[in-house]
Structures are given as structure tokens and as C-alpha cells.
Length: 358
Image 1 (cartoon, rainbow, N blue to C red):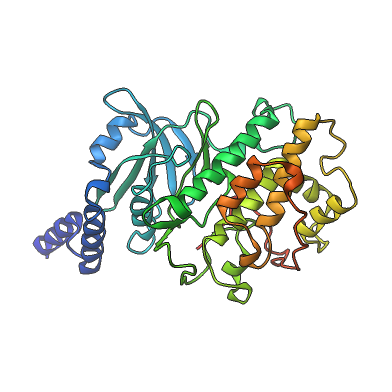
Image 2 (cartoon, rainbow, N blue to C red; image 1 turned 90 degrees about the vertical axis):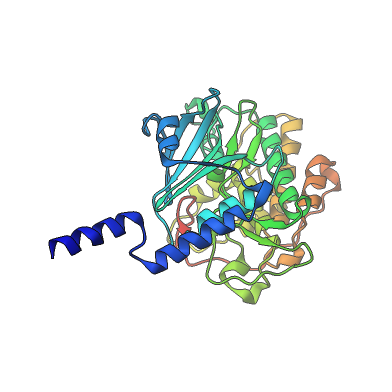
């Protein structure tokens, strides 16, 4: 009995005791290797421990696991995402490698390598010294230095994210739908150039495919398009990313905070409807902030574009190419978008930038 027990433990540690796990692992490895020249460098788990100094400097924590600061042998700094919460056969892990390895754009984070050893999985990215955008979206009255970004810088970030999404939707050989655009997934380099990150929920599809089939809900509450909740609003497509982008820039410009402050949790009121009413009545959505004309125009552009992006029916939303065109053009050439008809998830499910759905 003791001998059998030891053999079973040895087999278990080798990862061959479970035929299903072995099959899943072989599938995942084959999928990654089939990327050919697109496949990033593979690191051993020992390499990961060395580059992170045994996971000494933790940068952040998410539902998937943790992110650590590391350094390669050539002294280049990296961010290492260690996947702790493996779902199923590691679909999110495979999605991230498969999608991001196909990209090369200034507004998309660069994947430098990965680790895949039995249950040990990690992703190695270029290091972004300014962290994620959510640190810079806060109450303008806050004393935090993280809230001191100039309006021109925030506007540049909005355009950069739009260009990154336009590239994913039109610039790649295979269209990539991100499905989780939110402040936490927008990283900033030294010059505050934005980089779209975290492709765990991404889907690959042919450019000619306008609608994708999808089971369940993907994304983060508060940024998820209506059609992702219910197909009654239309099919799920790249326009679902457009909706998330619209909610992102409305949060960047600050109007969502004013809405949250005005509307109690016991009151049913639709966020886009509130913004539309403010625009129609000429009210200042910035709560009496004194801003110069140029900043006023940038803010108005972001609000108008945001409202176009969050139209309830997907076909009423602009493409990301049109979004870039509107942001870079004259504010007076942007028409007031039609008022979206009511779509509001139950207030019992609070809008959150951190709560993800499966």
C-alpha cells in the first residue's frame, strides 16, 4: 500500500495522473506553439522567479492572480502576471497569448514572453512605469498628486486608446474584440502614452464577421454593452468594445462622478440620460469648474463622442475609425447624439470597475 501511494504521488507531481488535465495541457501547448513566429519567448518557472527576485515587488492584484515587477538579464524592466486562478483549460491564458501575440501597435502593450509549466503559468509584459489609468481618474478636488494630469494629457490618452481599439478592430490580419475595456486595463508609459492590456476575455474573428457567437457575459459591470447582457438589443460585435470605450471616456472626463454624487443608490436614474439632460439644458457637468476654452472643447468632444459610443443599439454606435475622426476634428462638426432609450441593469448590481463577470 505504501509503495502504491508513493507511485501515485510521483505520477501526480508529474502531471500524468489526470488524463483530462494532460489533454488540456497538451491542447494549450499545441495552440501556443501553432502561433509559429508570432509565439513570444517561453520562460521556465525558475526564470520567472529569478526575474522577479522570488516575487519580491508586487505591483497589483486581480481576480486572475498577481502582477510583479521584474528585470530581464539585459536589465530591461518587465511586469510579470502570475496566473493563480486557472479557469477550465486555461482559456483566458490561451486567449491572451493568442490575441496579443498578433499585435504590434504603440497603443497595445507588448507581450515579451510566457511561462507554461503544468499549473505554473505567467505572462511577461513590458513595464509601464505610470501604472494603470484608474489611478488618475479621481475627484479633481483630491489632494493626491495622481489627480494632477492636465486635461490635454487625458485627451491624448483618450485618442491613444481609440487608436489602439481601431487597430484591434481593423489593423490586424484577424479582428480582435477585447471585451474588457476599463481604466484598470489601460496602462501608461513614461510619457503617459496609453497601452491597452489584459486580453484574457478577448475573442478572435475574421474581419468579415460582424457578429460573434458567445455564451455568457464577458466584461466588467459598468462597461458592458447592452447586447452582451441581452441579445434582444442586437448581436455582439466590435461595437461592444465601442460601448465600453464610451463609458471609459465619460468616466475620464469626470461626469460619472458627478452622477454618482447626485443620484442615491435608492433612486433609479439612467447615467446617459442624466448626461443628455445636462447637455440639453446647458448645465455645466463639471460642477462649476473654471476651465479655459481649449479644455472646454476637449471635454465637450469627449462627452459627445462618449454619448455616441454608448448608444443602446449597436448599429447606432460609430466605428472606432469614426471615433478617432471625431476626436481629432472640430467639436462643432460633432452632432448631438440621439437620446439612448432606457437600458439600466438592476441597481442591486452596482456599477463597479473591479467586479468582473464570467
